[in-house]
Length: 183
Image (cartoon, rainbow, N blue to C red; front, side, top):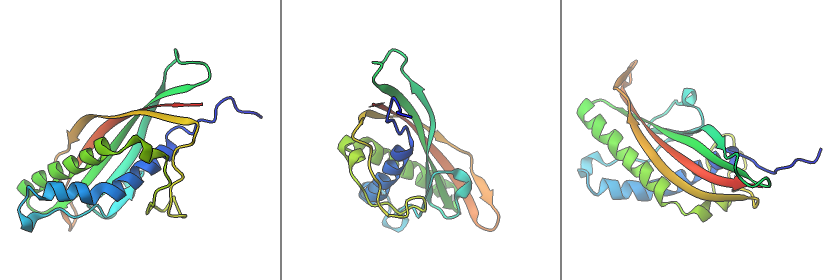
C-alpha cells in the first residue's frame, strides 16, 4: 500500500504540547507568582497525562485532542485540519477561597505557555517526562506538517469536589484549536 497522505494527525502534537508545557511552566509560574503572596507561591505541575482517569498526583495537567475537523475545500494534496484540544488542570487544596485563586492562576500560567510557544518549537525534538515516551524525547511534528495557528478559545471552571482523605480539588479546562496542514 502506498498511502496518499503522510499525516500523523494529533498524536505527535499532544506530545509536543506536553513537552512545551513541561519546559516552559516554571517561567510562566514565576510571572504569576510575582503577583501572589510569597507564602502562596504555586509549584510546578507534578503530573502530565493524556487521559484524566490516570491522574494520581496533583497539581496535574491532562492534554487531550478532542476532535479533528477537515476542510473539504482544501487542496487535494493536503489534509487541512482544525484540531480541537483541551488542557484540564487538577488543583488540590484545603481552603476553598485560596483554591479558587490557585486554579485561576494555574490556568493563567498554562494559557501563557500555550499562547507564547513559538510555532517552530513544535518541530524540534524536546525532552519529555512521560511514560508513553520512553526515549525521553519527542520526535517533533514531521517535515510534511505545517502548523498554522494555535489559539485559546475558552476557559471552563468546575465546582469544588471533595477527595476522600485528601482535601478538595478544583478543575479548570482550557480549550484551544490548532490549525495545521499535512501532506
